[in-house]
Length: 86
Image (cartoon, rainbow, N blue to C red; front, side, top):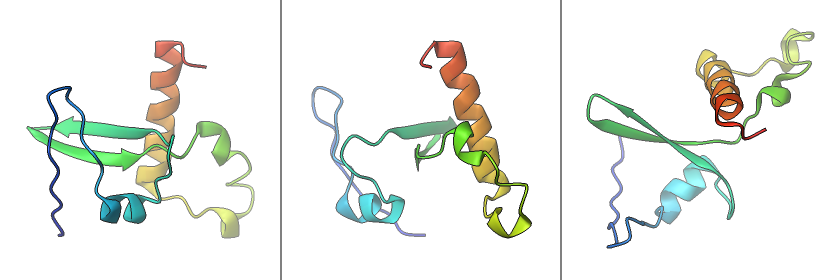
């Protein structure tokens, strides 16, 4: 496990460390998601949409999504739908 640190500003903002941006392949304007469980926060790149999964299962060689990727895409789509973001 690698630990990175940042500082929270008075406006509640922080900079994502460059090492984390590189690991998650984040670019300016990308969305990130914070998952809070039991007092811990995980940050995930929100770079998959449910529509990205189209055709992935017709050819097993193209299906490179993990169970977590699939679950995250479904949760993201449901959240966006309920929030009226589509």
